[in-house]
Amino acid sequence: MRPRLKKSLGQHLLISPGILAQIAKLAEIKEDDVLLEIGPGTGNLTREILKYPFKKIYLLEFDTDMIAHLRETLQDARAVIIQADATDFDYSQLHEERIKVLGNLPYNVASLIAENVIYHHRLIPLALFLVQKEVAEKWLSGKSWLSLFIWTFYDIKYLMSIPPRFFLPPPKVTSSLLRLTLNPKTSIVDMDLYKGFLTHLYQQKRKMLKKKFPNTLLKEAGIRGEQRAEGLAIDEVLRFYHLWCQLHRGTPCY
Image (tube, rainbow, N blue to C red):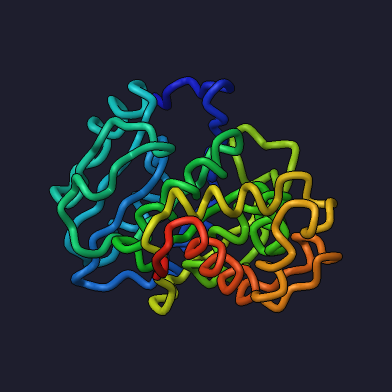
């Protein structure tokens, strides 16, 4: 029997066999892959993934009822169930060199889960996320601190949209599938400092940059003081950050 879904956890199960199979295919699973699925729920996507040859899949689930169901219904030695919160899970504790991450992310904590993945980007070469379409559009836009945080380390590609009727219970919004592919060229030494810079950059984002940063710093970065955060491209943000960081730390930050 399927466990009762909990609205407080934002649980919406993807139930379309065709779409589940397509997502598993888009993960481009290889024999030496180590995978991690965030919020497997009743294991609908997990069972599609298990049709492929690979080394191991960690199932990161918070709900104890779902964990009990997974233990009863999944009979595959490659599946390792972990009870944990994906918003602050430490991927390094798995002692894996590379982990492909997949997940139908709960709408209420999708951004927190993505932020945590970014903090562990050195271990995660690829992530495949199903999120609310509005969230996907924000991440793709590059016009928020979190979207820039993601774009700094990953190339984001929209793969497809999935209407509410393919979920149980049907959400009130359309979902979108995104692929995040690691950009190995980016190097940030202090992740907390970089996040702090981005949040300050986008705080009151309609305010002109000259009202938030010294004019001398803006001029050195080649950025007009009248510009606003939303008008900056990722390469401008990175150049500006490294100059700002050097000013604050006295040494290069890359």
